Length: 449
Image 1 (cartoon, rainbow, N blue to C red):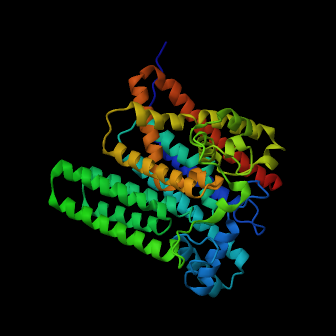
Image 2 (image 1 turned 90 degrees about the vertical axis):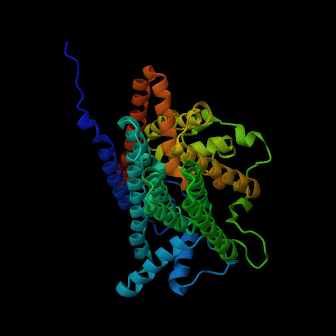
Image 3 (image 1 turned 30 degrees about the horizontal axis):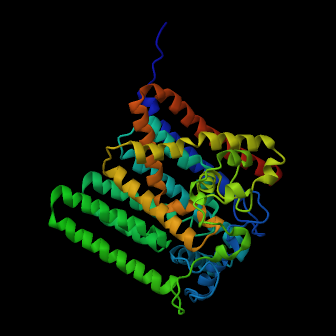
């Protein structure tokens, strides 16, 4: 019997095919789900609107006044202003030049979010191409970003969560380029994108920290005083960015740090004082629910690991009005939740069982750890379910995916017999995610829910 030969040149195209499918999916999703005038949830929920009206008010305030709102004036303030300035200016231009009504303007502006999401996908693809990883690992990493519903939802967000993944992934890409090639231009570009990230969301300051860490790593390798000067410049830039943010956005005249106030609502409150909140992973409950809805099952919404994992896959939304009509969709979601465990397994393997890291592991891992510390800190200060959403990992999304993929790669290198099984499970996961997204588009196209 002849052995089946696999053409290696054909395999190389798999990540590229996945990339283009991810772009097509985003374009289709935005076309069918764009913004609704009622501000109802785009994905099925009738009550939770992901602060859409407030984000829209912020954009409209910028457009109408060409200035930032005062620090004590509601809206989505305090939030870093870059996204709102960008979209607000576009809003005003569309209004002045073409006299388009506001409801139709937002139907156009939602495509900015789609472009941002596609840009994030492309930068993620370019980053993994810098790494010497097997094609199946590359395919999995880009596949998770291309087809996981929570990442696709960014393409229809009116919020700074739409822009930050792009700026953060671009900064990470150029940092990897610098570490690989040591060209100053790549470092400068990484810092510029990091600054844009900070002025999109303040938590992205962790990007400046990992850039600083990478420079210290390089200095230890080369003992070059120029690298010390660059480190000092990054420190100064970071200080100025945070000083401007704290002074203008986060500390108003009462001299008290402000945060988006979802934690004040009774149905959003969590109990981070309980140690079990950070340890309990109610996986069976999550599988039964098939989703991590903010106002849903408390054993899912009120434990950090459960809600974090569930929102990683499907966001923090309710799909009941879809799954009640199509129960097979819920079954599909349950299978995706089970197979999705490969992602945290990769993270855990790399964090706790792999002793030999390279610089890519260090910058990725450091970003993940700092991001997690920030999430825990803000949950203590502002205990709200939506503050435990996986989207708060946006500044380190690309690093998370790479770190998990590298963990699984090392695991299969160590236990070579597991490679075929793991690769099969990986591709099953991204295939089923693709089927879920396509099904959701078809349902919207056919019966408009």
